[in-house]
Structure formats: structure tokens, C-alpha cells
Length: 482
Length: 83
Image (cartoon, rainbow over all chains, first blue to last red):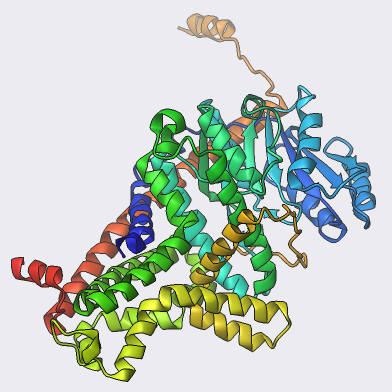
């Protein structure tokens, strides 16, 4: 039961650290540093978006002579080569087309093809790895390179914001989630001195750092960006998050495509946990990544479904053995939830007011309607007691049938919500009406959907399912909102 | 006096060096970067201030709520009794 509160404590710990970022941040060690930057854009059938991406990159507020864009074409079968070649003719000193004749091996292989070429040229001083469909704000690259003034910094990442236009209910959930998972928690990780992940769509490395970690990206897992992040820090260099450097990306607009994308991420996290098993809770091996705080945050995410299920199992077991105690613990657990919910939701909306304007409703509904109802009721424990006619010391046999069903349902909810979220995914996958999957997600919550995906990733890893790099389908309708 | 002024004028050498494009850019970006750092530091400090205010508001609301709708949770009652 107590294990079930670990994710809550971890979230609260992270969110309290954000305030300290106002005092302990890296801005004081930055300067106007404008190294020669080689931008690697991995592309597979990105003909519709790649031209726009190149134009955006070259229109950034950064000296043109210090900017080169290398599009690594992963054996595209559409018009990507033609678009990139036309851009090369237009900008012969800035745009280069690298073609892989055999593709489909995944992003890491594509990146390595580009990195090999780029590192062979002495010109490059820093390497920016991005996705083909992201849009950088004018000043983003400059805001990132400034941190490389400090030679102890190996990598810098930016804040990826959801920029689908016009976007839908699901993409707005992601917009809110990115405040908590990036703008908030990566600030906290800056304070801790240990970054969990450089965003795959915006990671800047110094040349020295890439060479120090072997001059290539890990190809053995689905989380190549997290591997790079860990290796950077374990090699003794800092990885920094700059929340003011903003990159816009189009995120999945359906539960099915979200499931595919997040399953890849979740499996990647499980692989990272196993691959770096010697660093957890071990500062000698893991440096700051081995600190208690970072391990707590990492496992709160990776093991969240386990904590939720254990919580439910613990409560149901107590229901039969000591009902009064189970009811008291249940109410205490949810009071902690009330505080965590209010603190995290409102503070997240404060951190990114621009996203808050479009995704405030998704922020409120993030835990789902049932959990939200329990959160509201938890503020009035007397009402809850009255509803089930609870008196101290009573046994479960003394409860009425309706109360028994209700109490057991509430106890089991932390596990059931993941099942409902899975049904929402199935509903979307098998093309049932949109309102059905949306209703199921509103009931279960978006957070439990992510937990269900993590749980599913354990099964996939246990079954040693094929490591597939499923490309997330994008429409190219991403805009920079200012 | 007049002679002295002439001597001063003639000994004065005006030194002007043309800055290269790269140097001009560097100077421009140094100025821009300095301002950006100031603004960013300020924004981060605001997050700290917002957090302090927000936590205080949250605690105050919890006390107001306990005043009118007291909880039966042991540790909550204990805190209320102590204050």
C-alpha cells in the first residue's frame, strides 16, 4: 500500500525542485558561443515536410557560415531525395544530402551514417540531432549553443512543445503532459545534476562529447536518445535542459499512434534500466544518475504500473483482514493525491502559460473522471464515511451490498483504470466510433493510459518481441505558436 | 598657447580598424546573449516566487477547508490542534 505512494512522493519531490531552478541553474555559465553546427536530419519518406524543415533551420537567428544541414535519407521511396537535392542547389554551402541505400534499420542507424560523415570533417564543432518534422524557433539553436561555452557540458536539449494545427483532444493531452514531463521535470533534473533524457528531436552535442561516447549512437535499443544521455553523464560531462529553447513538434493525434510511439519509449526505458543496472542507487558507478533522488524519479516512472497494482492489491487484502484500517489508509492516500494533483496541475499550468491556454481542460482531466471524483470527495472524508455508513472499528461484513461494491471498486480502481485505458486503445485500433475511445480515456484518464502502455512494454520485453521502429504518422501540420 | 594646441593636434593619431563581418556578428550576438540570459534568469526566479506563493495559498486553503469541513484523519486533526 505504501509503495503505491512512491510515484506521488517522486512527483512532489520533482515539482518542489523546480522552484530551486530559479537559484541553481546553468545560465550564469553561458556566453555568446556560436560554434560550427552540423544539423543531422534523419529522413524516411519526409518529402512533404523536409523542404519546410530545411527552410526553417536556415532561417534561424544563427550565422549562416556556421550552419550546415545534413539530411540523412534512409532509402526514402518518395520524393525526399529530389526535395533535398533542390535545396542543396539553392544553398550549396549549407545543405547536404546523404543517402543510405539500405534503410529501415531504425533512427539510430540513420543517425550514425550522418555522424560518421560529419565527424570525419574538422569543420564541425557541435552536432545537433533533430527529427525531420520539428520546427525550431528563431533563437532556439543559439539558446542551446550558449551552454557549450562551459566545457564541462557535453549535451544540451530543448523544450519540445506540441504544435499540431489545429490539434485535437488527444494532442492537447500530450501538450499538457509535455509541460510536466519536460518543462517541469527536466528543470528539476537540472537542479539534481542528472538528466533522464535528451529529447530525440532536439539534442545538441559538442564534438568532444560525441567522440568521447564512441562517436556513434547506441543501436541495440529503442531508446537511443536516453542511452546517449546516460553515456554523456557517465563520461563526466553535463547534460543540460534549456526550457527557454523551444522546438515545436507534431505529436500523435490518435490513441493508436500514441500507443505505438509510447510503447517504443517505454520499452526503451526498460532496456535502459537493465543496461545500466549497475548505476542505480550507486553514486560511485552512476555519479549523479546513481543518487537516491534520481533513482526514485526513474523507478517511479518505470515501475508506476507495479506501484498502482500493488496499491490496489494491498487495499483489497486489508479490506478483508482489517476494513477500518484499509478505509483510513485509503482516505489518507487520496488526501495526499489531492495535494499532489492541485500542486502539480496548477503549477504546470503556471510554468507554461501559453500551453495552459489551450490545454487547461486536459490538465484538469488528466487523472480521469473517476479519480477526479475521488479527489474531490477526499476533501470531505465525512461525506464519504456517511455514504457507506462508516463507523470506527467496523468490519466489512457490516457494510451494505452497495457500499461493499463501491468500496471494492474504489480500492481496485488504480488497477482497473489501466484496463479501461487499454480498452480505449483497442477501441481506437479497431476503428470503433471516436466518441467511444474518447469517453473511455476521459473515464480512465490520460496518465493511466501511459501506465497501461508501460505495463504492456514489460510484457513485450518479457516476450522478447521484435524491436520495431514504427514511424509515427505525421501530417506535417505543425506550427510555431508565439 | 596657440602653438601648444597645434602640437597637440599633430601628435594625435586617430586609430580606426575595420571589423570583419564575423567580429561584428560576434559583438551583436554577445549583446543579444547578455540580454537573453538576464531575461531567462528573471523568468526562472519568477517560477521560484510563484511556487512559494502557490504553496502558501494551497496551505491556507487547506486550513480554511479544515475549519469548516474538519477531516477525521488522525494526523490532519493533530496538525490542526497544534496550530
